[in-house]
Image (cartoon, rainbow, N blue to C red; front, side, top):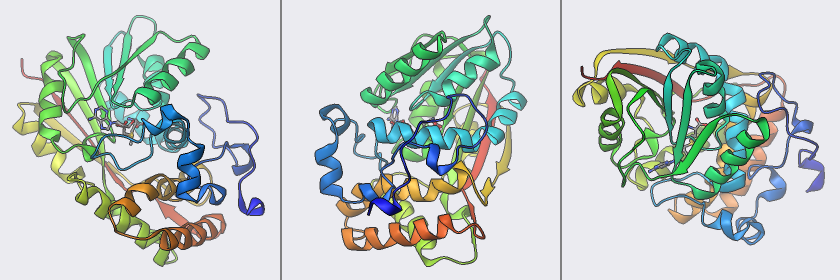
Length: 319
Ligand SMILES: C[S@@+](CC[C@H](N)C(=O)[O-])C[C@H]1O[C@@H](n2cnc3c(N)ncnc32)[C@H](O)[C@@H]1O
């Protein structure tokens, strides 16, 4: 198997916007050398085992989850940065990132708000919060993180000028409650900005049964856990129902022939394999076949793959 595993050299600079080549990347759950679920779990640290996520979160957390989020941050920052600027995040803002994951995006918020601003991140995965803390400490950034489950606990530390939640609401059983909690910590006239997926919005060229099956498995695993991987188009009305005004919308479909973005389907299938098998949607043999096929498709320089359709929605908190 070693010949099909991307080599482990060195992760790219935290804030480089350039895409890393495969050989410059650490190993991920999606790498074929990590394909065996039992082996994966036995190799995980105790802390990582506690970071598999809550009952509704289908993606691997902990260090493996953080590695995947770093690649996703690089792939999607070119569409996230203009969205954040248009939604009004700027110099001096006090900002909260809810479901911040590895903090790769949270620390980029720090550069947007500048030294006069303040940035905080919360996530329910204790291990990923530690990773986020370490990475901002290494970069010398003034960003604070804390572990918090937004489905169970109130947010605090407000009032904030800007609250942001990226790829969080599609993982929650009660996204309305989370939006309400985010509203509660915004100052009157402050902004809530959310980005989330409509998972059926993927495409690839040429047609790939493995890619289609990956999209289907991700969607069904989410639905089985009681969350909505198609939440994107519902976001404007969800914000309006919770009292936000002047709600606006952009839709993007990041699409790749190479680079970090093209790795995302493979990495994500690797990161949901445990949930897919646990929910009985596929057996390990099928997941193994799909990973092999998807890796072949990803490595073919002629193929094109998109991420899910991403809804970028923002609104103003009640005055
Ligand atoms: C897909 S990741 C996105 C991370 C980050 N926002 C980004 O865009 O890179 C979703 C994150 O939400 C976190 N999460 C899921 N359910 C949560 C909850 N109930 N409360 C807080 N965080 C949660 C997960 O641990 C994970 O880090």
